[in-house]
Length: 383
Image (cartoon, rainbow, N blue to C red; front, side):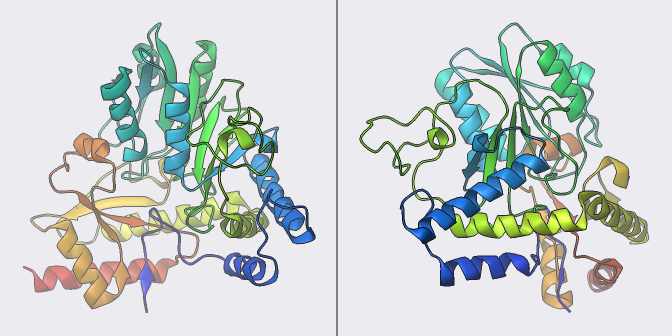
């Protein structure tokens, strides 16, 4: 039996409706969105709009037109950061950011002279909104925070930070890569101006899908310019949404697959999904504590995390553990820095990395049992 425990990287398997919807579109439609007046192109355009509308409803966003599709959450974050920040602007961010945020900020610091303040966190990855408040300066243009760490799983106080940003007239950008689909997100109640999401993690959709929810009136410079299917004689990128931030032929098949995934999520219920993953997290945390020489990181409390558990075995390299589990036990986990070196500096594993399991909706206790048996077999063979 193959056991997949890398859902923090990408969820697997997908609901069967996802590949079925993609297959049906490719075989029976194939028309591109916004690029034709024939029936199939109009139908494709309608399917894309339905996906925007479903996402807007999921995040309690008022205007589907300002749900902008991108190829990934990384692209969405880069679009927001490079499209808004200007020389001299100050940014407040967390100690836990993925390189999708951190590399973009550091490049802009080097190239255009923005300044960055990093808010401290506990070794478990918990952040205080009071520390965010202390980092704000008169030049603060943007606060950007991950909703939950992809290394530790720790959920950040997004609502409190959003309220703080709103009080100080500062834009608030949230990276929901690890939370969209497993935690409720309300851009109105949580005062989120810009929400970056990906389709291929807990939204259960295909790779190559993501987007940016624009819940503010701030001008955003397009990341790329090009054809939008309309106003083709106009020599500049249109200033209306979504065309303003979408250029080129979009991933219609992926977006249709994402719509099927969203329909599945809505039918199952995010609260039910969260409850199942919490139960499995608690089962896994209890089971992992029986493994000799294990080092667990993060809150070790399902209520404070999404389905991520990082760990090491004393005196053993994470990549060797992961390789053994895959080759000998058919258990797939992640090892390394997980593209988030800041979080590893926080927990003292920057030179080593960690093993990481990512629990998903389609996992069950037998998968955790297989992991524990595999770890015990590894220890027995590598004393």
